[in-house]
Image (cartoon, rainbow, N blue to C red; front, side):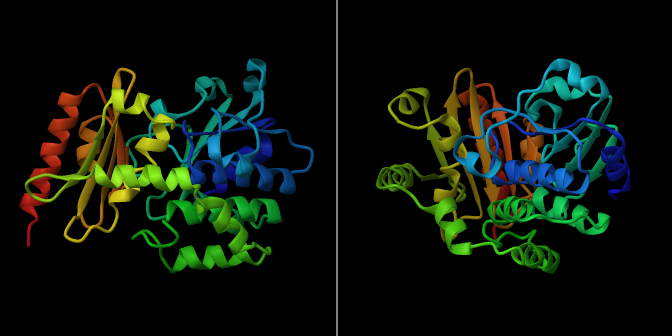
Length: 313
């Protein structure tokens, strides 16, 4: 599956690595990991990592590189962890001489000239780790830590359905590079008292539809009163609804300027088609979408409630 991308990496200079905007641990881990792998196995090659601010995960990737427009003329642009062109951070990828994509989301259509998409992987980092193994690449400690971090975060600490025996085989190989799990988990999951209190506020905001879909809706006015970024609320607070007894579907709606960000989750059902109908995408049990207004968000909530009703035991 990776031969064409491996050959393109070997034959192009520079290689410019893109990923989705508002990156999570998997997007940045795969980006930093692939960059470290290429530098280790193709000495002298120029490799850039580009995109918007890494935010709280900057310790994985470091700051993004500044790349002049002219660099794209001879470049291979590799797009990671992205199912839709609209989500790619830095649209200049389209100017590259050659484009390639490595992704584990459900396939919505081609983005690049060379595609390696497999939704059976728990993370894009897992795909990059598999690529390294199949290509016989030397894995550095830096690459191993970045890739392992993305595998941990996107698998929910190896809890989600996509976690397989292959996941643990790849993770074991990465752990052979001396990863300090205690240090890594403290960095990923330690929370300040203020963060814990914020999560407590959102726990109190949880509501249920008539058929047991849990949801939180945060208005622009409520957002303005919080000392937190919109993605920290949208993506960060959906998890406060995990593991509620009797709840199989949950969704977090967060108003931003001119839009409503939606994070959909399920422990049992494929909620991805609903996300796709509203212009989003992702995975069967974890998807997202951006909606124009509250009215549209409530229509989506009605569809999720209908799904819950139709699947009642």
